[in-house]
Every structure is written in structure tokens, then in C-alpha cells.
Image (cartoon, rainbow, N blue to C red):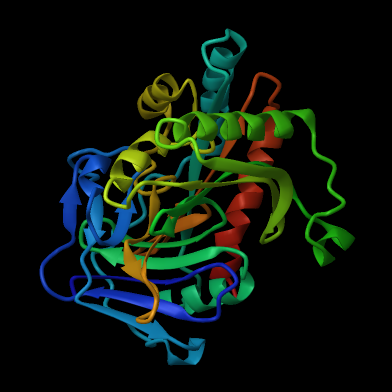
Length: 356
């Protein structure tokens, strides 16, 4: 097998296995090259010669009715070893650098990300076991295990839709602001959370950005929210956008405009994107990119459907361990220790899978 992706959509009980058995996934170097394409997309945060957009072109699409029917072993592609581990001191340097540009007014918002490496535990679980556990723990999230020769192997459990829909009916969301649920609040959906001004402002930036993006393609869209949604032990502020498009042949143009959103990059988009590329202590690779089926049938009796999700709460599977990724949006009023603790809370989504 050249490449595969197995995924489960939020709140669904069945799974979809995408397999490419001949040749390698198609490498693309612009999101506009996704126009008119079909397949499973794995896109990086920043496209380059070494980090292309990958399109798995399925030779077989299988709907799996239950977790017991998932193959216990799937061929895993190339896997790297643990790279240099970013430290708390690295984060301190990055935060000071990013925050200074916020205080000077260069940026309205910028997202600071980091990674953390974890060696393999004494009792190591297979990739499929990790995937199945994530599906059980996180019913509200898009869960995906994907492996290609170019990208290596990644597992993600993400709540953030980038673009979803079929025919001319489409959806995206503005998801930002983060709080950790504790104590009695873990029994609910976060309905008692009181949001800070910083979180509200951060989410509003994302929602305004998406509105401006959609206005380039349609005048027929509606926004609902913001409202609180739960993702694992965290809650976020979310606004839903529904809209129409004339056809599904130019989704690459829409994706080029949307990605990366301020939820993973910042504002102004071009300046913060270039700053992150030049200054962040580690390469994001396929973290904070996006993945999912593009114009594929989710089941044989359904029309062609797209479900693309931002690659958050994810980890890269390595020969000798795991590399976890997380980030948080910074505003002028951000406090370093609070932002660090937010990334720790986000990494728990993947970290909880590693140790039985």
C-alpha cells in the first residue's frame, strides 16, 4: 500500500478507509491545483518543495460499520526518529519576540505554536489502537490516522472545520478562544464557562476574517454564534458559517483564501505568516495545515462530499516516540504562563492516548 487514511467524522459511528495501492500520492504546490480534484488531502501549514499538498487518490474506499471491523494492522509509511525537542526556554524566547510585535502594533493577533517529543512507552500501542482510542475518547472531533511516504504518519483529533459540504451547500467555522474544563464542569458541555475579553476578541478576529473571505465568493451566507463548544476537556468559542457556491470545481480557490485562518496564523495574514515561518523554533510541517476527503463519497449511496479539517491536536508517529503539537493565539494582553498552560492543555488530547 502506498498510502492510506482512516477517519471518523464527528458524532458518527462508522469509519472510512481510503487506500492508494498504486503509485504515490500526488504532490501539489498550490492550493489552486486542488480545483476539480478528488481524493484525500493532506496539506501543510506552509507549502514548499519539501512539504507539498498531498492528494491520496484512492484505489479503494471502504466504509467500516464498527470499530471491531477496523483492520488491526495497516501498512505504515516512512517514519522519522525524534528530532530536537523544543524547550520551555525556546517558548519563552518566541513569546517575547511575538509579543513585542503585538505591543508595537505590527500585528493584531499571532499564533505561537510549539512541539513536544515523547519517547515510546514501555507498552507501545499500535497506530490503529491509538486511532480507535481517540475515536472512543473524542466523539465530538474529526479523528484521522493518515500515512504517506512523503508526510510520514500522523494522528489528529480536531474540532475545527475548514471547509465542508456537497453540491452548492457549504460550511466553515470560526473557532478560537480556549478554556480547560475541570471539576463539575466536565459533566457538561461548558455551558457555565465565563469567557474573558481576550478570548472573545480572539474569536471575533477569526469570524471577521472568514466573513471577508466568503464575500469574495458569495453573497449568500449566514453566520450563527458565537457559542461554546466542547472538544475533549477543552471548550472553545465557535461561529458557524453556511453559504452557497456556484459549483464545487473551484474549491482550491476558496481554500487558498481561507488557509491559514487567524486561528492558526494571525492578522494581518501575510505578515504574520511570514513572521512565523522566519521565527518559530520548530517547523510545523503538517500541523496546522488541513486534511480530509475532497469531493469523495463518504458512503457508496451518498453524493460526493468534502470534509476538510484544520490539523489541530495532532501528533507525528516516530520510530522511537511521538511528536505532539499545539499552539495558541496571542494578543497584546496575553500572559506567557497562561499561554504555555493552554498549549499544555491542548497537548493532553494526544498525550492521554499514549499511556494506558
